[in-house]
Length: 323
Image (cartoon, rainbow, N blue to C red; front, side):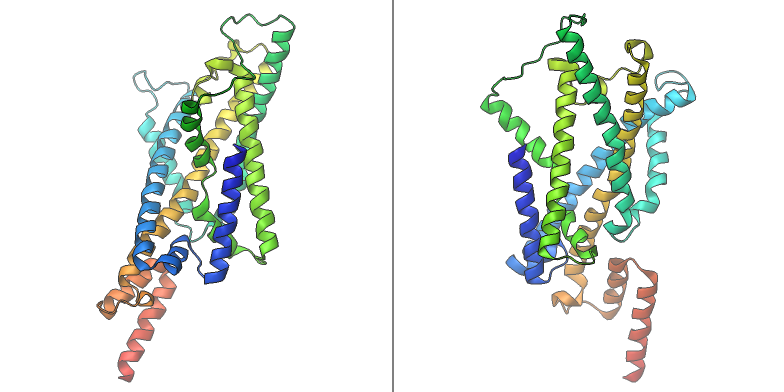
């Protein structure tokens, strides 16, 4: 995990330096400055495909996390007749997230980051507290679970390391967002960007390490890939009622984090798609085989701003009148 965090930090800093040197403001423009226009299309296509799969994965998680919670609030379950439909819950959350999905920059979604990070800390705190409590009960002979087992100094095999490393790397994957963040800073100096990237990666590393350690201490070798599957929703399963409510709030916080993180992956994917369109139709990429009408339409779509599109139309009309 430390290697992944360091590699992430260095790649983010390198991207910021490349952006400052080339004057590029997006991931695709940095690639175009280094390798040309075709490379920009290829990278943006990969980025759009990746973000699309991430958005689809977030939608599945939103459905799985929020459906039982909504059913708990309504006193129904998904399985019974007339129960809560997971598809309807997903549609409801999609409608709720529409205002976030149409934002023009990540700076407008900064509160999503604050709320999401604070929400997931609740679940992390519950896991760490439950893990230490279980260790205390184990050392004092008060634990009655024979299946509970922890191996503190197990050396992983090469196969296990190769299986886990890509998952950890994906947890740090944020390269397509860093340039948008740098562009919104008031003083994006090298020193300030290094501090911001270092603090962000360090905070993520600490949170994920505590998350994994707390979950392993809580459930031992029986922990599943999704820790929420180990957390019981039955209040009688907890000797301490406060721990039950912490896990309940943690489950809600995890759902809030996933829901608010969806726009953060949707916007880079949308921008990558618009950059692909921009390469083929926009004049700044030296393509002159398109008509003026096509330029106006694709410029309006690319900027996502009605007022700018009207100004462009007016300027085109005035130029025609002068001719």
